[in-house]
Length: 196
Length: 308
Image (cartoon, rainbow over all chains, first blue to last red; front, side, top):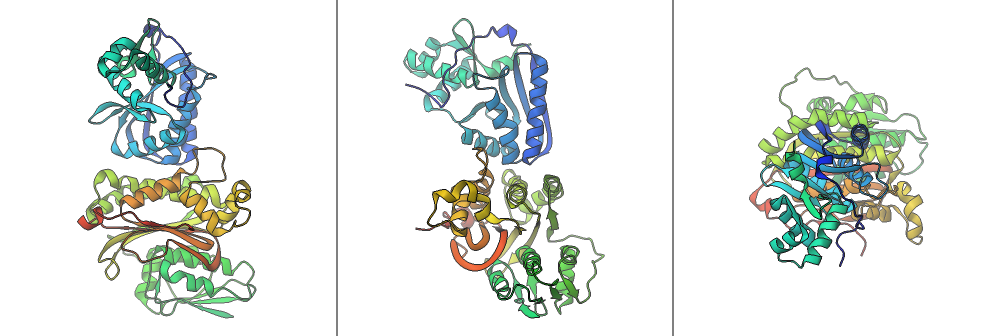
């Protein structure tokens, strides 16, 4: 059984190496494709400076208007660039400060490209936005609650077979919405935000 | 000189006969007679700019005879109509920009769209006032009202991305007493660019070799989100506009060439797809958003254009 559109690309990280963190604070009216493109290039440049592994926080707290064209360029194409096997760096993205006015455009562009993104939403907290199979969502939610777990622990929490839980976790790791650690454990991206 | 009479009420419903008045010898000079004009919405005013521009393609600058009603002239002046019309028409009659700058139903006066910077300017100018208008006058929840600027941004970008020419945008609020019995906000965005058929021809005409025309192009873009760009991220704008306008029980239509396609809500008796209407180049987009009522919230799906 396979989950989601992306092939699973095994990769392991020691959580302690994931110290570099980029925070892109976005402002005001994010509209039009050129604006989104400029934003994406700026974030890519910031990531380049941090090295090969980093957690990039896209902070929408100050964004008043976000249109679909800008979201497509600044969010969807940014994630796409770092999801393939030819990615220039190992980057994990988390969106933060999302209000109702941002959620529609971001959900729409993620769905259009069959991407997913971990996001902190006002109210419910961390959620998985975009495209994901049902089992992936269950597993992602369980890992979010556990913060860190292996496939056996997640399988028990979700009532899934261990093999199915592992497949879902590896697919989520390949899509960069959970972190696969060296010891066969997986971490929620929100847990990385809490680390010093 | 051929006289093109304007109706008493110039809006989307009455626009096609104006365009039909341009048919005949394209080199013959036209006189747009607005003597009896009593009311024009953003669609009507932008449509008049488009019709005048089209009339000037092969003929001498057309004449615009101003309305007899000073109130109508004053309102058109407040919408910024004459600043744009002066370059298109030889204007017969007096007008001046009103000094009064108090509360207005003009949400966005007629604004030229030539670049992405213009789209930013539109969003900057409209956002705060648009939020206030939608929440206080049209009773939209705040979280939905934020999407008004998004709709405006996407519809303006349609001009930049697809027309290969400049265009105009305007938006206004008014009460549609007879047709709807409540307030509406009207958005019009128009250009005289290549139109949907030409914009999509290179990438899509081969798929419809027996029936590639304006209606087919509008169907491809409006119903199926197709664009001339191979990037799968493109084509979302119109789809999201339709989705949002549908949530608000509004009407959205696109006229291009000789066809018009629309999402028609239950309060409107218009046709979802019209073919064989008088030719006008480019694209003319009209959006009507009605005030929220309990009935509107429970409203059904719009009728959508498309050939059987």
